[in-house]
Image (cartoon, rainbow, N blue to C red):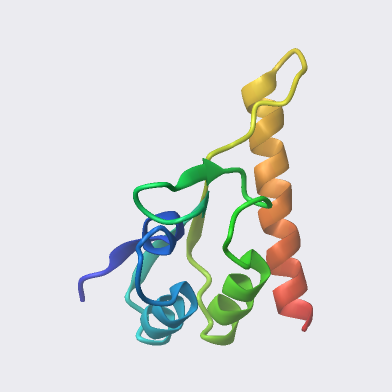
Length: 110
């Protein structure tokens, strides 16, 4: 069976449709190879990429949908914020991964 990369940001920035309906449809059908946790604010052509907890997508809702269908495969954070410190990319990646893990844990407990 073919599977797809489900990029949340790419779908969210489209002018029509619902990101939640897309996640529900493809998670239910088990067609997702991995979910690209990319966050945006706005629609094409005026969209802006944001960090994971600042865009228009309700990421906790996406996590609940994904969990409801038993999706347990890979999630990829993007973009990672650069934290002002000695290792800005590493600290930003830790931030993004911790945020995603908290979403997953919350979805699993609800």
